Image (tube, rainbow, N blue to C red; front, side, top):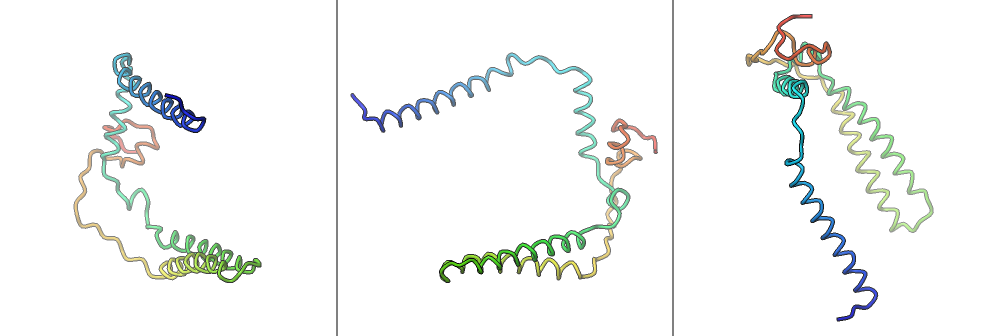
Amino acid sequence: MTFNKREASDWAQAIGIVLNLLAGSIWFCLTPLIQRERPPQEVKQVDQFFELMHKPIDFAKEEGRGSDNLQARVMGIRCLIYGGFILLLILIPNPWNKRWAFVFCGAVMFGIGAVLFRASRAKAPERRIDIPQPVIADIPAGEALALGEPAGSTQSP
């Protein structure tokens, strides 16, 4: 069976893909067999990481006030600027039926910016958490990471 030039090229590409998939799969399956053991220090660090990751975060102590309104304001202003710029692109000399793409994209971006900016001016609701949070240690997870202390440490900074 003979192939023309295009068919030969297609088969060469298909064979390359299959061989790459086969070699990668064999390598993936063999790596656990040739893997060396991790040092105890690395195992300890990974365990500490996951212990800190599952520790609840005290938002009021670590972050303070929420910044949702500030983020909405910044993103809203940015969207208003970008949307206005896209709307200005309708001044590029094109047929009017092709300028509608700029009008639509610019209007959507500008509208999203207006909604975000308006939402940022609303008063932020007071955050009250009445549900008791479990405490693993005296130091919140973020502070323990910043101080470089082990996860189970009960010393306060």
